Image (cartoon, rainbow, N blue to C red; front, side, top):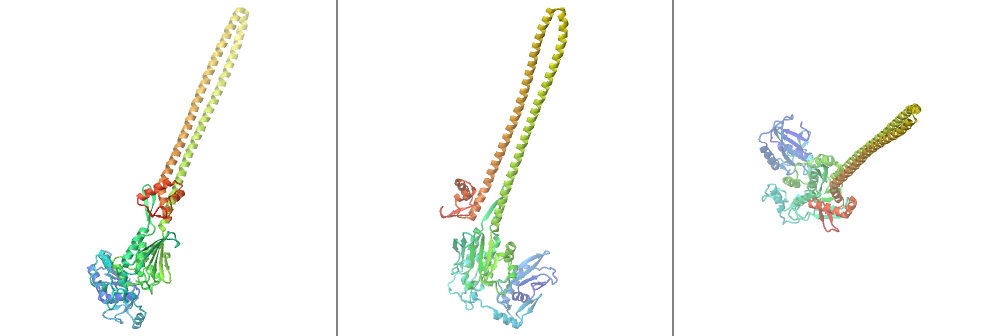
Length: 570
């Protein structure tokens, strides 16, 4: 539904100027053409033609000029095209319809959902408050100005500046002289724009101080954008086998928005230019001038657009540095929060931390911990295998011992049985010998002799049997010893494999991590030496030199200056 910031129009009406004047005299807003009052989308025929008509009417029929204060976009809703006119609040109030002049018939303000005539008393109050436009109304001290650089930028966008460009871009004073605005965009001026780079996170030691000014501020701005794009280093981290994740120090779009915002909203009437600084942990960009009069901090953060200079904003829009009015600050806030903006009495400062650098370190640390944990688990697994092997060996030894005890028991039983049989045989033989003794002493003597021979023979057989058993036992023991020895050899082989695996893993981890660690050391301490890196990584200086050579060959780093006194640049 319609409200103080939105107006619906079914078609392009004759009073479009009235609605626009009301919005720019108040807080800005939007006009949707092709929508009924109740919000029903109808769409428009020939939307491109409608866009051109709106632009021509707003430029021709409203004063002061509102170029730089409006956008005209097309939106598709329910397969129907709607034309949307987006307007920001102006600073040269009261704005009025050219044919009606600064009167109640020509000046309007937005009250609720409608445009109302501005009372005469309010018109006088606004005119009393209006500040003189120093950039536009004051002539430049130099009148021999050229604008070749500005023309090149316009031509790059397909726009040719004709002989009337100075008048169309408000580069002339009422009496036809180049003004101070023209001086800002001229090929040569005295506007210094510097980028300072510090070694640490404070201003103790200056590393670089480069000049990008003394030319058209459009060219200065593009050079600063290019410089920060280089400084916004891309870091890489391994996140898996054959995979790399790349992150920049800060979000690229945020950095671009802040730099353009600094050039667009700087208070050049103070004679100062924006300040650009690079620290080891953040980018800082400072714009001269507090918030534009009438703009609150809450409105600033939510995207209410109120340009300090509509003329500068108009040129930036022509060159497509500004996409949509009021879209930049809300994007920055979504990415980094409101705390990155500091409001002071005469400046506004953006301080953007290198979030991505700390996240990269966290990923590397997590990767190292995972590898260590995996290595420990592998070691534990190998230890379990060794322990299991030892238990198996102990079990085999117990079996051998039990087998020997069983054999000994069997031998004892056999020996006892043989002794018992020998005793019985002796008794029987003794009885027979007694009987035989009475019959014949000669025969008894022969039998005694035969009995002795039998005993000797039996003893020899018994000894032979015992030797066979002993030999068999020794063979069994030898077999068991061979098994034990084989088990010990297997154990030794397993331990060798574990050690080889650990050495291989350690070697691979070293290859993967060393280069990333060297990049981080260089990012933190650009003046660090190969010897200092070797000490931190517990490597030889020769090995570190080899890694540095590979990084230079792959264009990851380069050496600035001599070996002594120079520094690394990623």
